[in-house]
Amino acid sequence: MEVSLDTIDLQILTLIQNNARISNADLARELSMAPSAVLERVKKLEQKKVITGYTTQINPTAVQQKLLAFIFIRSSESFGCGKTGEELAKIPEVQEVHNIAGEDCYLIKVRTADSASLMHMMRTSLRNIPNITSTKTTIVLETVKEQQQIIIPKN
Amino acid sequence: MEVSLDTIDLQILTLIQNNARISNADLARELSMAPSAVLERVKKLEQKKVITGYTTQINPTAVQQKLLAFIFIRSSESFGCGKTGEELAKIPEVQEVHNIAGEDCYLIKVRTADSASLMHMMRTSLRNIPNITSTKTTIVLETVKEQQQIIIPKN
DNA sequence: GCTGAAACGAGCAATGT
DNA sequence: ACATTGCTCGTTTCAGC
Image 1 (cartoon, rainbow over the protein chains, first blue to last red):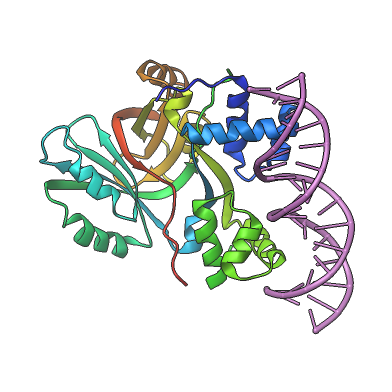
Image 2: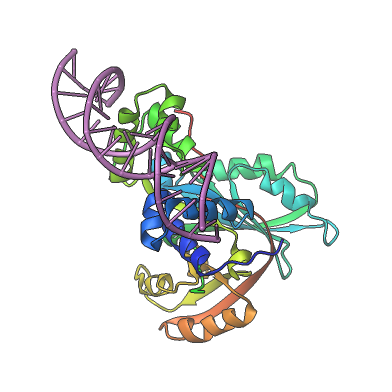
């Protein structure tokens, strides 16, 4: 779907991206517009799927999710068939599934409580997915930065 | 900092994680509590840094950020010195910086408009960081899943 | 730490330009 | 596509338990 965003839309996205709980009234004040006009734009951005959701960032260690890992996965599935990727996406511990260029087929990002639960996930969820020929796991020792904010152009 | 979360806190986190814009009144209804009590808990979760922010998920292609890449970076810095990681974290296109186990030192996640702007970032921002000895770039062809939601325990 | 009340402000839809 | 209006409902503070 084609979307065209003007300067005001981009300003809204910039503000709302860094604080999803900003009130519509505050948004309107920042933009010097009537609240109703801003609300209309936000609703349209949601409809156009420019805004895909509002998420609360939670400290993983506070909820016992202390291990982060990236796993490269090779699959013997025919090129273009995304069946393996879809199966990987169903696993709750898997936050991201990317189809990548190069020898490996998929790169996934996984968050679990500890290394034991990572092993458990690999032995159960991954084992049941056909066509997976090999995996290469990279354990994260420390995360220096982790934000999902995107660079939004000025206009 | 040590934190202890009870069942109600975990319920709040589960609800608010998937919809950061949920009203305090709706939260209270779901939990069968008074709005003021829920507000008090949310404020404390923010203070305790269990909640670290509220983010709006934006479709990257709508704002011309069509390229996603992961880059493995080797550094000659002495072990435990995080200077390189801090420098990488300053680059706006870099969404994530992880210190990883194994031969490579860092894994970063980068989002740019296209391959040309990725090359430009590498030639400018990366070049200026001392101690980087090599980089290995993995281009994402297609993203099947990308969520930051964490698994929150039941109690 | 939760409830209930009360003041204040925001949400949201209708209407007009 | 934006501004104004007005009713409704949510937010937030405070007293009391």
